[in-house]
Amino acid sequence: AQTVTQSQPEMSVQEAETVTLSCTYDTSESDYYLFWYKQPPSRQMILVIRQEAYKQQNATENRFSVNFQKAAKSFSLKISDSQLGDAAMYFCAYRNTNQAGTALIFGKGTTLSVSS
Amino acid sequence: NAGVMQNPRHLVRRRGQEARLRCSPMKGHSHVYWYRQLPEEGLKFMVYLQKENIIDESGMPKERFSAEFPKEGPSILRIQQVVRGDSAAYFCASSRSTGNTEAFFGQGTRLTVV
Image 1 (spheres, helix red, strand yellow):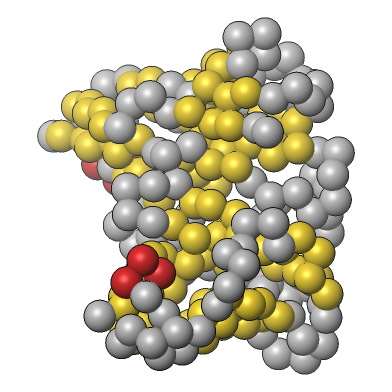
Image 2 (image 1 turned 45 degrees about the vertical axis):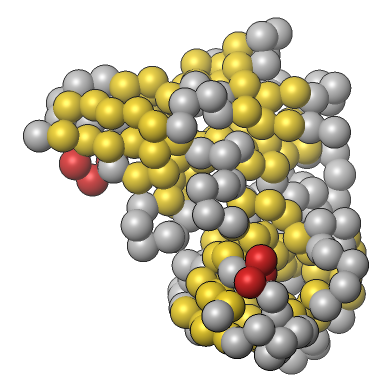
């Protein structure tokens, strides 16, 4: 069974600085998707970034980028130029692509606080 | 295009009562997933439904929990005879089709059992 591990329950960063959130996963599949979701206090789950395992190039969305290391099964999220609005819970998630209707498997999350 | 709509946002039930959680998927989406989030935890998959069919309920507790997605109307997650351990946030997500398409989440229903 696939698992997702986030080893940092809490992280903090100052405005304008850079922070990296860690995520490791375990799977025997060769093709899959990885995601980072943001959950602010409103509870809304917001997709931040998505990575397809067959793509070697790391995904980037504005200030958010990932470091995808397939052999190491590592998928970290880097937030550059941190803003107060980035404060939230961040979840790493995994999904097989080969099975119809496959659900997301989430890590336990990392709470990110941003100070001014 | 409205997003995934869940209601109610907050639900309080006494032990032994029934809880009904509703989810209206995004327009054009026929696939619905329910997840549960316990305090300080990530979301855990419960059930996956298509219109009028339960496709995968491997994450659903065997007793007291049921789900449906009728031909007309929202998907319903039903919890009978609630207990304190059922207190959690319940999220619904919908997608247009299976495979490599994104699932969009609702804002969740916070169930509190007193």
